[in-house]
Amino acid sequence: MPDLLQLNNRIKNRLKIFFRKIQLAGVDFGLIKKNHTPIMYISEKKHWAIYWDGVGIANELNKKLLKPIIAVTHKVHSVRSPIIHFGSQYMWEIWRDVIPRNSKVVVNFFHGKHEDGPEASKHIEDFISNHLLIDIIVVSNSITQSRLISWGIPEDKIVKIYIGINSKIFKPSTETGKLINRKYLGFGLDEFVVGSFQKDGIGWGTGAKPKLIKGPDIFINTVQELAKYINISVLLTGPSRGYLISALKKADIKFKHFEVDNYLDIPFYYHALDLYLITSREEGGPKGLIEALACAVPVVSTPVGMSVDLLPELENCSLTESFEVKELVATVLKIRKNIDNLSVELDINKIVNQIDIKVIANQYLEKVYKPLQKSF
Image (cartoon, rainbow, N blue to C red; front, side, top):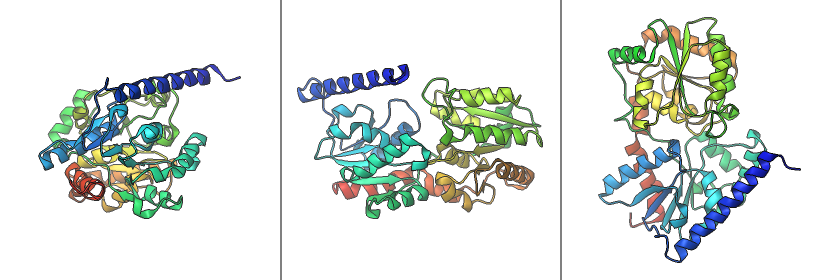
């Protein structure tokens, strides 16, 4: 017999399918207006990373072309656009059966491997089996690109484009600004403040159950070890962080957690950090990597996602070779020891020139949208 959670999920899924069919019928009968915007970027309903990626791309291209050619929506049922761009492979999997057959399809595949678990493996096999329904697959890093090719996805169908950042919003702080922010948030001058700004709990509730590919268990173990050597404190933002919050309390490590509703407020929190720590086992970006770099915050990261592509270019950041706590601790201590010798601003020009949203939006136009629709 299925447990109550499984039964509840089945009922919810059936209701979603039923509601989706009603919506599609409403479009077919003219009760719901069809959306014919030339490019529709599909994001999840929550205003999280994928949504802001789409908004950034749309804003830049619409300004560049002086007319609205791209919009962001989660209402896939009404979309009848020539190009439909799914911000993640998971949304494409849900909606692919209702996409108009004459539309060109773009799908972002950020991360995932068979070793991530049965659900991930099932999703990957489904993606591989149905990739002929996709015109262009966009990846954000070399690891995912190589992985897709090894699974049999044609190399000429894959385009690598980094996740972008608005460098007018995310930019370095002054030393005075950093001190003001730290004082406001409740951190002293003698504390070494380490940041983690992400979602690492399962679901959109408290996040008491950890999303292990995000490595919250590695993070807490690393911080606990660092506490033996330095006066470390932790600054968290993001939803569903219950697992990590409970672990920090249990370890008696000082932390502050803020759920930031306005994405434009996020730089304020980066400007209070001494270091940004990424302990994920799997990533497409992460977004925190490029946000921290643009804000001139040193980064230590496990060998995941865009970290592998970008961090070797920077002397004042570091990429570990493994996911071992011992190596992470040694790397953080090394960065901390040298931190006074670093310039106030990291050598970020190399990176920002590659990941600024204007550059990224133009790459989408030239490498993805124009090949599918010459009129752009």
